[in-house]
Length: 78
Figure 1 (cartoon, helix red, strand yellow):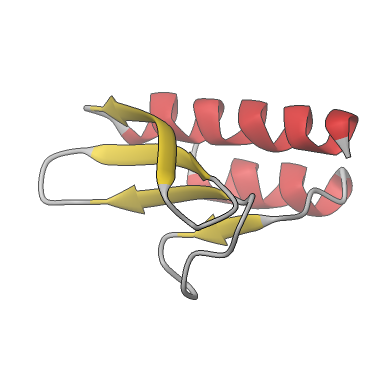
Figure 2 (cartoon, helix red, strand yellow):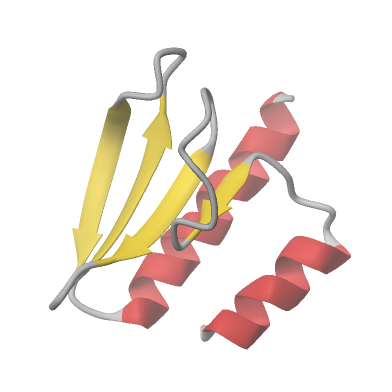
């Protein structure tokens, strides 16, 4: 999956509560994806915006797949 694919899924499935590569400060209960020098991080924030269940990936494809998976789960729970 690439960024374009992920953005289409987010739009088509009306997924919410996410932080797309640091486009704003982290809010409570949202899913976040970010990139560091050599890795991608996907995590969910708790009620105090602390990182919980963080996963680190060495490629964007796997990170975006996990990001979408978590957003879909959030939609089912919400």
